[in-house]
Image (cartoon, rainbow, N blue to C red):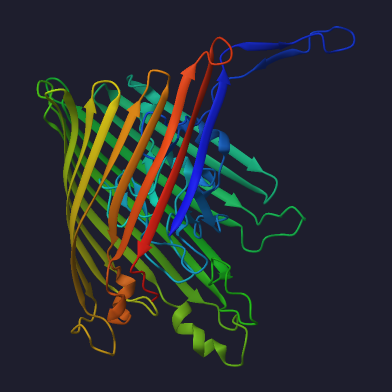
Length: 527
C-alpha cells in the first residue's frame, strides 16, 4: 500500500517590476519580468495530469524522454542516463533495479503501446529521442487511464509526435528547421533536421532526422559514470490528408524509428548487479524501436453524436545482443554459465486496433462528453533464454463519460472490460511441471468514478476511486502457475485546487493543486 500527498504550484505576474534606487549611484539596474511558467498546473481536472509542451521540450534539451519527465511529481527514474536503460516509475510502481520495464506503467507513442514487460536487467521501456515529439502527457494513478489500457497502477506516459502543421501553421509552403545542441559534461552533441511540406491546405508531410551523441558524464565529485555515454539516430516520417466537402474526413500515417549500436557494454544495463564479486559480462548490443500507425478520423459537421476515430498501430522493440567472450568475472568457467543468457535476442511486436467515438449531448440539466471504444491488441514475443516467448491477445471495451452539471460540478464514471488469451510458444497443459508454459485465459471488469466541484472563489475540490487488474504477462508463462493470477489495484484520491488572477497585485496569476492518494496492490506474486 502506498499513500502520499503531492503539491503543485505556480505564481506569476504579468507586470514588470523595476529594480530602482538600489545602486549607490542611483542608476537604474534593469527590469525583472515575472511571467507564467512553461508547465501549467492542470487545475481544471481532478485527474493527476502533467503536460510537457513543445517550448519546455526545446528548453530542457534532455537527452532522453526519462530526463524530461523526471521533474513530474511522483515520477522517479531507474537509470535515466541512456535511452536504452531509462526506466520510469510512477508513484512507486514501474521499473526497478532488476527490471527496466513494467506493465503497471503504460507507455504510448501516437496511441501505439510500446515497451517490454519484464526483461531482466536490459529493460526497453521507452527507447526514443525527445526531438521527435511536440507534447508529453503524464497521468498519475489509475483514474483517467481506462481509455488507454488495463493494469495501470502507476500511470500513463503519452507521447505525441510533431506534425508538419506545427511548422507551416497550416499555410501552403515549405519549412525547414535545423537544431544543433552541445554539452560539456558528458561531452556530446545533437542534430535535429526537420522538413515540413504543405503543398495544399489539405495535405501535409513531415520528415525528421535526429542524431544524438553523448560521452559518459561526471558526477558532482568529478567521477565518471561508467557506460553513461551513447550514440543513436532517429527518424520520423508523417503525413496527413484532410478531405470532404466540409473537411470532415482525415487520414494520417506515420513511421517512427530509433536505433542504437553499442559495443562492449555491460549486459546489466541497469547497473544493479556488479556487487558480490560477480559480473555478468559485456555484450555487443543493437537496440531498435519502431512504431507505425494509420488513423482515420470523421468529424460529422452537423451531428454532435459522431466524432469517430479508427487507429491501427504497430510497435516493435528489438534488443539483439552478442556476448563478448572472456568479459564475465566471478569464478572460473563463467563464460559457459552466462553465454546463453547474454546471447539471447529479445523481440516484441504489438499490433493494436482502436475504434473510438466521442458524442456530445444533453440529458436534462446534464451535458455529456461520452467516449465509447473497442480495442483489439495482439502482442507477440520471441522465445529467448530466461524470457519465454508467446502471444498475448486482448479485446477490450471501454466507456468514459464526462458529465457536466451546470458550470461547477463534473462527474466522470469510467468502465473497461477486457478479455485475455495468453499462450506460450510451446503450449502445455496448465499444471505441468517442465516447463511451465501453458495457456492463460482471463477477463476483468474495471472502472472508476471521479467528481469535481468548483466554487466562485477559484477553489475546486475533487475525489476519485478506481479499480484495475494487472493481467498476467508473457514473462509469467515459464513460472509456476501460482503466479498466473491478476494483481488487483485500488486507488482512492482526494484533493483541492485553486486558480485566480489579481490575487496579490493587479495582473498576477496564482494556481496550485494538492492531491492525496492511497493505492493498494494485492495478489502480487513474486516470480
